[in-house]
Image (cartoon, rainbow, N blue to C red; front, side, top):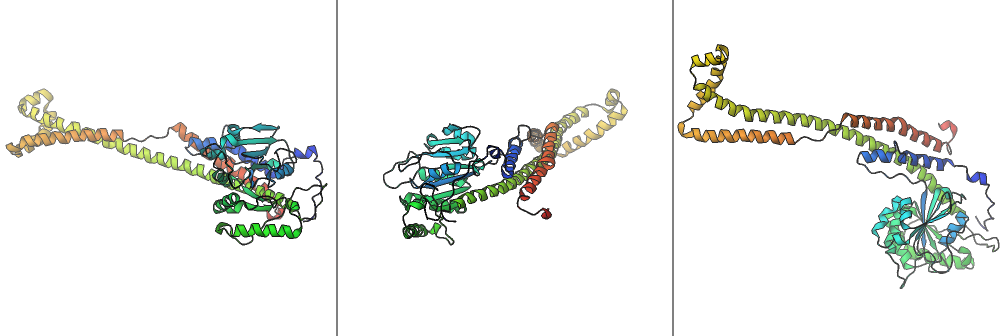
Length: 449
């Protein structure tokens, strides 16, 4: 498209309150995770699994040299003057710009509470002090589904940043859904620091990168603009990680009715890119919901299967403990009892315990006495020592097996796990299918369903 973008008409206040299908789907998915009673995060935590609720908005990080028009683009998209703009380095830290209920500014710790996905940034010393968030009530364009991250203006030379800016921007980029790189034709478009970070990001998340020649209307004539773009593209293509086919760099600038320009303005394509990313985020969120449901169900099944194995193992250990304990006590008792009974005459034993029991005792103890007489006298002391050691070892094994018991799940816990599984199978998964169908109905024909 060419020419200036016409001034946007004032939005109808009623229209800003209408929730789009994508916004509603993202919010409902988010609610399934954070519900106080049956939220997936709470269920997963009880199983020892850590889940993060999906973001309700996409993250768009904008980077580039200082005065590249990053903050100006955000103000234009939001249609509100939120970020400072100017030739000087106005943005020295990272600023989240998002839509909310009321206009508010947040500091570092509050910002991380709002965006827990970015907590890994805490490993970069000094970054927290340069984190902030600006909450706007604007509902223009797709802003209610977008969070912009305005990054520090990048310069070469002796500029000292209060933190490792290269690593921090790379970390932000890995968490973002889109990364816009603005090259300013009037400034340091070939800033080496910018190119180094872009090359690093290209290695880790090259599919998120989008390049734009910002402030294109200030580049002079069309030939000057083409020369600048060629210089930038040549510099980018010198780097192996950025030398790829189909390289695109649309020209964009903030439309100003007071300063019409004949330069082609492709800023609307930026909005289309954001909207496309929102649609992809809806699909990714629904797919991730399916994966998380399957993860929880498989964890529940594994927990129940492990519990069955533990119950079987505990039963085996109890039997082994009982058997070794009986042998450790019964054998020495039988050995001692045999010698005591052998001291009684048969008539005395019949009188003491009765004729029937006396025969049984004589038979069982007679075997022990016979075996004892069979052992040579020189070996009998050694036999007693070995026999005592064997009995002691049996008692030791009984105690060992008794301690090998594994923790098992109570009936109440099993019931709770079954309820979680039923809830996911009967409520969450059907809800996910319904949301997916609702999303697809926006673009597919009715007869496809």
